[in-house]
Image (cartoon, rainbow, N blue to C red; front, top):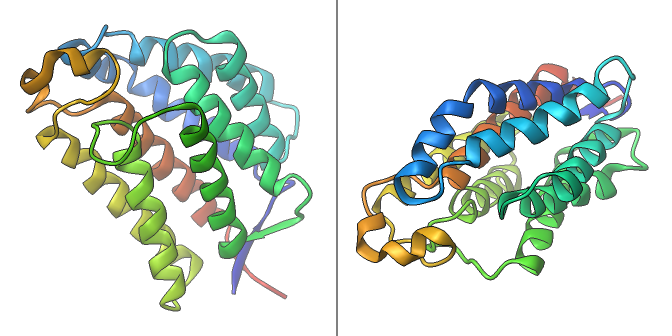
Length: 216
């Protein structure tokens, strides 16, 4: 069985922040086609602020996730700040007291984040939102893990499903948020939240994969 250390993995969140910041212009470009065009700017601002507070402080993964979630929840406007904020805070809460994180605990963490998002939003799969990335990614991870795949293999399944979910939003009509006002005109464009969610999940998965070790 594979697992990784909570205490030494806070820097994973810095890698996630780097990916969001790198894609700031791209995310805003996507958002500008059917939204208000500020998704990349707001996300980069929030992740950048959190990264400054995490750097050099030797945070655990739980501590870094909580820092990121709190910044997004309390200091970033728009619709995505609270959604991602609650997701990361829920992630942190699940693993806070764990010294080692295995696939089962990672799954529990993902489900808790999803529950947090669904508790404050009305979107469901098919509405052209980040849930079109997150839900199939979690399902794929759980399926792979349930089939006896390793933690690393299950993470690969998660990333593939996240990217497929992101791509599926191109063929969906937006049902919630600003883009929903466009109706059929929202077809043919990726959802910015689904796209940022795929970036987050892939970066998180890669960071974990690099730190996996056999259990004693």
